[in-house]
Image (tube, rainbow, N blue to C red):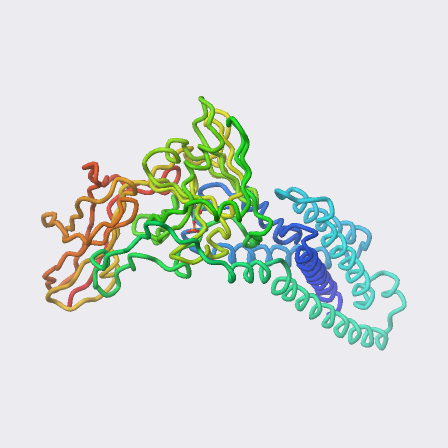
Length: 516
Ligand SMILES: Nc1nc2c(c(=O)[nH]1)N[C@H]1C(S)=C(S)[C@@H](COP(=O)(O)O)O[C@H]1N2
Ligand SMILES: [Mo]
């Protein structure tokens, strides 16, 4: 029995000890602000993996796990790590030197990932190195107790073996528990999250000369329809950050450089002193499927991007702004979208409050009309004036289109697909969006019947989605409802079905309902 599972268990415990020690140490060090938030080898390997995710896999992950894709990644990584550690423990017990070298190599992969992360420093490998050394010690000690190392096996009688087994289980149990507690403590208390949350709590979003007032006529009173303005809490979240970047406004800076006449750097206080504006803008993710929920509307407060670009003075020839976040993510936005008549903002507020940490605190970009991946940089710290010929945003490098205008789209919120409703008058309702073009018409079709025009709610901004409703006299049986919108330029939403990659899904949203 001891030969079969004990060495594998030793490998597992060594893995838990390594992860625990490294996570705790990384948490403590980044809290002391002496290392970056990706000093944890697990976070770094995950981040490196995310950065190498091809579009089809990203699509799959977003569709299968939605906004829980990060949790899914960590669970998957945990399983792979457990299997590797178990195998090293099991095989390595016969040839301990080979086993220890294999375990050290695993640690080296973690260290390499840490060093490869944007903004990492040499000292960031300390948690991984210390964790790996503790893991190696755990492995060799537990192998000894498991009684499978050649020297122990040779002198082991039956009594010896029983003692060893008890000792092995006790020691392995204690070490594994310590590893788990250290991992939890490192995650819970490590990093600067508490500090940054405290800083956020003290902030007030600046007043604006012309606050956005959402008329009640923009919100239809149909049960189950999306709220016209979505709260920060309920707003969809999409980003590549496995740990939410913790940016303290006190140290935040934004730098404008590249093809400019003079570089501009702004501090948080300098930004807050600028005349701020409010703007209703609906964000949409390019990965949103037809009928999907990766879309949301909010009131953003910020300083127009065109103003900071004017301060820097854009040189002729520039056609793109490459914005970069604190964690190295980038978006390439057409310069015209930041300087034309739409209100692209360096946003500091969402629905009248400071940005939630997950949505880019303290400062993010919000650009009406463009999918988030080419425009909505959260935790933004850098704007580089450049050209599409020379530079590329994060997702463009992975097969997504360089430019990402949002396609005209509509969604049925109620009745939900698969719902059963009573015969009689049923409100078919939902939202439609064509940012910066606006929505002029929404039509609904029942089965193969004629298209019928839905009633539209008020449209306080053409940069935001618009609600619609159609009363339907539902008759017994199974029915298919379809929706299509026409934007403010008169373009009918295309029926051509397209997957999200490379430039956004298209096609009409359809739901099937049963009427009893
Ligand atoms: N720093 C950073 N900003 C980012 C991203 C990211 O991965 N990192 N993702 C973008 C994408 S793809 C979208 S759709 C929007 C989503 O913004 P939200 O999470 O506030 O809804 O953020 C954009 N900004
Ligand atoms: Mo996105």
